[in-house]
Length: 294
Image 1 (cartoon, rainbow, N blue to C red):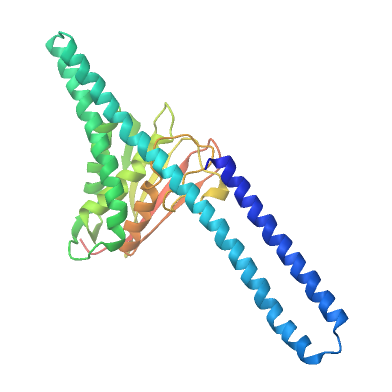
Image 2: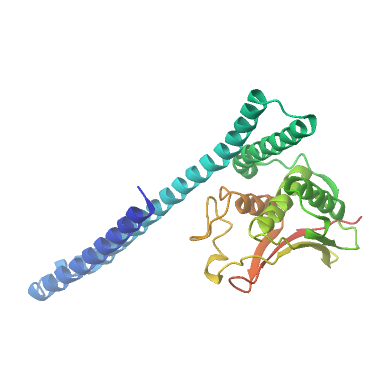
């Protein structure tokens, strides 16, 4: 079912629920008026009437949620199909070119680099899907002491290579060396997801600022600020849900990145939230984590 059909289904069930509630109210009031002398039946009607109405309302809410969940699932499948097919098609194209043409050594190495980058993108997408299922069951046994500033700068270096960005596209600030206890791989994945998101929604001019700062003796923050398309106020509380994608925004992705970030940070006893001044004014994502003495 396409998005238009699903929206019509939602409207249909909402209208159906409203009509049933109105009908039940009308019938119950009419029954009370006609049978006002039957005291026992009146009492039973008053008792069961709210239960019937509550059941109908809950049923309607459930149907609407299921339709929306199916719509998000369909969007995820479509996004995953695109994210998997695009690098595979690119790799195949370059392999066919290498097989059918005689190319000089420099061109061959250029093609190899592009195919390796597409392979990394493909592996990254697969790893993201696997991590989304693994994070909620993550164990605490793999936690070690992590110097946060060093880890964040490593994430920036990885992102520069992955997206072929100039040095001034990603700016880091933070003079302290706060330490946290956690799973390094999971925390690195969360920070990489935030930086990738900032780049993805920055358009052609990437200007991302990443900061590590101490909030107080027991808390440390990582802030990722971009100057991109921004986030509407109504969407700020939804963007960390699994499979959620802001309606009308066309960008690559599976709808899992921010869900993974929130899951990882919660497992580490922290929190993550987003702020934006509106469309076209960029976004600020903040991770807060408990710190330990260095």
